[in-house]
Image (tube, rainbow, N blue to C red; front, side):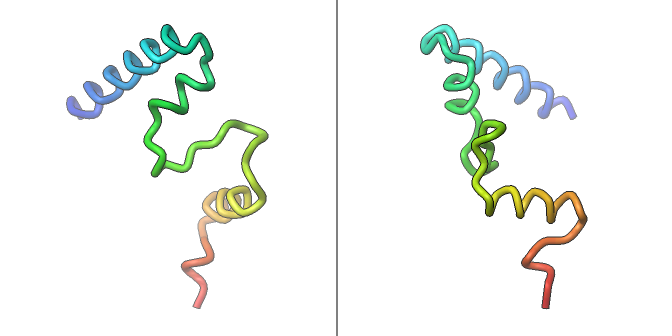
Length: 66
């Protein structure tokens, strides 16, 4: 748990530093987030990512179907 808190503190600090450089919260946030997490700004998700999100919320995904 302590390692997670340190990671979150560092991430917040990196986002603030990126904002000070870029003067754009959206750019700063998405430049720090790991791309593997698939984060996209609200309203900019394509249809396939919306489908994947709704499948996760429903508790099943395409990979679960046989």
